[in-house]
Image (tube, rainbow, N blue to C red; front, side):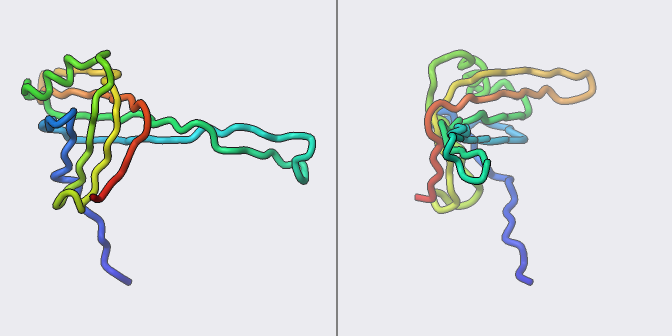
Length: 137
């Protein structure tokens, strides 16, 4: 059996336009899905429902990290509700060969959390608008 080729996520970079956002701990998404359209009709074979692919939903990207009050983090907070902008996710390794995602989206949610015995943290979600691309070039 071959050894795993799994890669550590450490070193992943998340950018709003061309600015990297610091101290991110977790990134989820883009969680894309396609709507299904029921096209079952009187001629559908063997009493089975028939479907076709519908509109693709770009989904959301979720982020969580340590709040350090950086210029990039404050820009993320200030962008809530603003017009869509370019975002990118660069996978660890030498770019562009390591791979990167790109999309347009807007900040849909931002939350700061302070616990008396923990570091300041934040969470945010970015709503994707339009296509999501993946590239290694």
